[in-house]
Length: 196
Image (tube, rainbow, N blue to C red):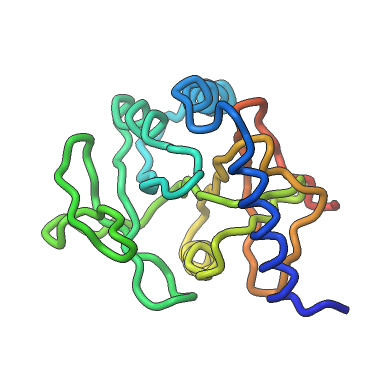
C-alpha cells in the first residue's frame, strides 16, 4: 500500500497543475455564485454566529465576498493565526476594512489587540475534496487539528469552499484527517455522503 504522505504529495502536485490550467477561476462571478449557493442552503441563520474565514493564497477561492455578506447580516468574523504545524489555529476578531499585519507566508492577520474568538462555523480553504467530505489542504495539518479541537468543545459547521474542478473521486485520508460538513463550489452545494 502506498505511503499516505507520498500519496497526498502526489495528489497536491496533480491538483496544482489542474488549477493553473483552469480559466475563469478567481473571478468575481465564481465568488458571487458561491455566496449565493451558501445563502440558498442557509436561507436563515437566526442565531448570530462567529464565522472563521481566511485570506486566500495561491489559487484558492477567495471567501471575502461571502464573509462580507455574513458580516452585514450580523455575524462576527474572525481570521486564523498559525503557530506550529499540525496544531490548532488561533482565531482573532476581524471586521471588513481592518488593517491586517503580515504573519507567516506574509499572510495578513488581525492585530494582537483583537480579541480571540472560538468559531461556530469554519470556512475551510482546500486544494481538493471528494463527496464524502474528505479535504486535502497544503499539508500543514492546521485545519485538521483545528476542527478536531473545536469539535471536542462544541458543535461546529465546517464548510469547504472551492471550485468544482477541485473535486476528485477519493481524497487519501488518514486517522488524523477531519471531514467537512458541507462543500460549496460555484456549481453546487454538496452535503457529504458519509457512507462513501
